[in-house]
Length: 267
Image 1 (cartoon, rainbow, N blue to C red):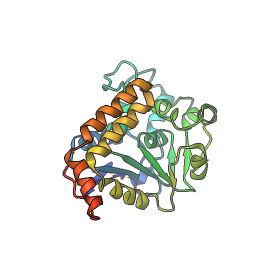
Image 2: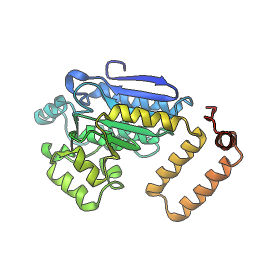
Image 3: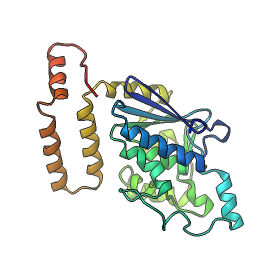
């Protein structure tokens, strides 16, 4: 895993980096495996309170490794091999989709720090994060149509909650490259940052200083908000709040504010 993805956990913040620098962090089979393995590991680590996902070198992620397109052109890879008739996660994702959805399933906030390029599968990977901190000059694209394909790494499921329907269609139909500044206009970029990773780590440290039980409850509610109906969301709000009121994290947050000190939360 260390030759594709590295993880450094400090103060409750997991600093996750794609490190296939010579290929601009392109997605090959080993990268897919490393992303899923890393995400599953972080899902189970109660000490983690926030995650920053970034790419080392010149790019966040250049998309699918060119070798995969060579296999398609040669006929070595055909049809729905590994796409349709394949094991799926509880959320309905196949393996490639799970490399993106695992970050949405991590129970704490994930911030994607995007610089250089995030194209095709790399762009879809950013959508799995809760937030995207993007350099103004970054280049992003729903690039699959260039290769005669459609987004198939959860891009359609995740993009629908971020942009207008016509914007999603424009990006998918044309495959055009758009800037970080345009991404902010469309609603894809959460923040424009001169140094996305530095600002993402700072935000993650701030989140890590909040009641972790409340942060996790917020993420469950926000994930439900995308697909749940009003009745389910209203009930979930009440259930989550009922579990938090009077809990150790709630008590510590209240006392710390009243005593004008930094709170100390247990994992």
